[in-house]
Length: 198
Image (cartoon, rainbow, N blue to C red; front, side, top):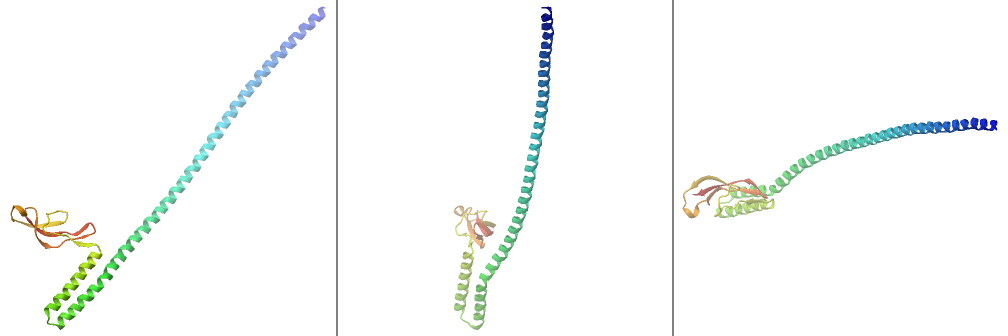
């Protein structure tokens, strides 16, 4: 009986020791697992940050490349536009002068006719025809005469060279035009020089 008690007592501490070992082992495992999980979390967080940095660096490189391409494209566009403008100005001038050549021919014929004839009326009619043809040429190119007949004085269209006392009903109106003005489309290319009533 005593031996059994001793055996139980001996077994008891062994069991207690085993439980303590298990607890320590479990605690050790938990600590190890906790340490490993912290290290794993740190590693995965570092990897995520590195991946994010790599992704952002790739995006920056892509945007820089896009910026350089767009700058080069804009530079090419600017050069092409300037070249087209220059060509347009040259060809527009060429077209106008080409259209004026028949008028020069008409003036040369009129000049020859004036030298050969004494008929003033025929010369006058010839010059009138050339003048009308020239006005038609201007109208075809959207050049129009600024109308000054009984017009109110307008600083956007007229240039007053002098004023003249003409009575109350003519105050602020154009009395006389000394030089015609012209518009090209909506733009004034020469102001009409006028006398204004006061």
